[in-house]
Image (cartoon, rainbow, N blue to C red; front, side):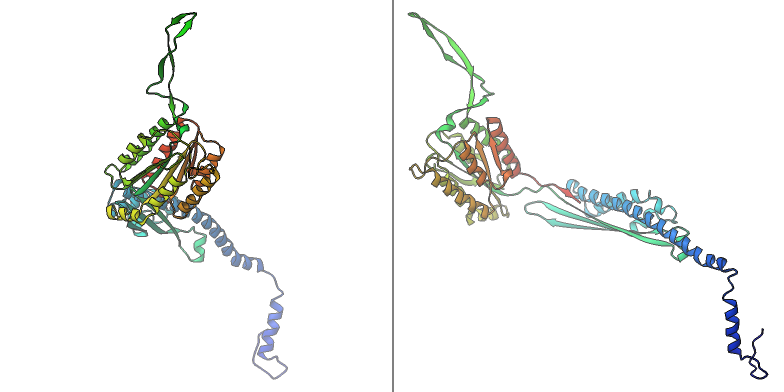
Length: 420
């Protein structure tokens, strides 16, 4: 039926006619499947394409991240260990980046996508150099890289041809930097330090002695041989020499290290004050003789007082321009049994601990070594140590030497680290 605008003769007006026709067409479902397929199919294809591209972009981002990580680390390492210029370090970073990115299959389908020129344009290398205390330098290398990754044909139905994938990496490094330090040795020289250890003297492993005897009235001349064991005081001298060797290697010109030493038995002995280099401390320790009782309180107090003094910081500032790291090396083979010449060993422990606490407050690192010491002596040294890693129980001369050597290495440690 054709709709007209006639009103006469019982004819429907045009609006009623159109409504009538619509009511007769809508219920007719013929051809609806084809129409729906034509509408939905591109959406389904595009959705599948998006899912594929999302997985591809995740893998591509991981590859790019590995590439920028390697590039940043390579550049930072070259700056610290090889002393290259900033420009050369940037070239090193870009070369690492190009080598990995150009092999990425994700860029293979993009004309010029993996080209070296395109990669250089898509990458930004930033290098920051900072002067450290002394002659050291630290470097920070940051790399940002953003690249357009081609999408598959199904995703392109949505009208987008590429998607940007970006990564960022940062690496830090530092050159070897010698750190200034001040160290005071607080060493036990009580009578028990004259006892033998279980370690044979490698330089003189045996000794001979007269072991003649009488058989009836007749003297039988005889010479006997025995193992020659190191005494505790000798082991201490050898261990101290090893520690000082580590410091000498780090500071051969005596510009960074100041050493002092004080010994104690039941009284504090005259100290050798803090001085540049290690020579005076070594002479002092080599002259120690084992005798007397044990009271560590006044010796530890003196070491703390000398290190905490503003004069010590000023000495370094005037010499090398640094603020020194400060150390006390506290060693005993026994337990406190004297205090101000009176038998009041608990008071001696309390006084020593008081200055151990003060040292901790002043950020003075305390390394303690219990050399074949009894339980109470060990407990005191554990208390005074800055941390568990700063306490060493040594049951023989070899362990004493190893402990002192470790302390020397840690104190004189040169920093040359690379972190991502």
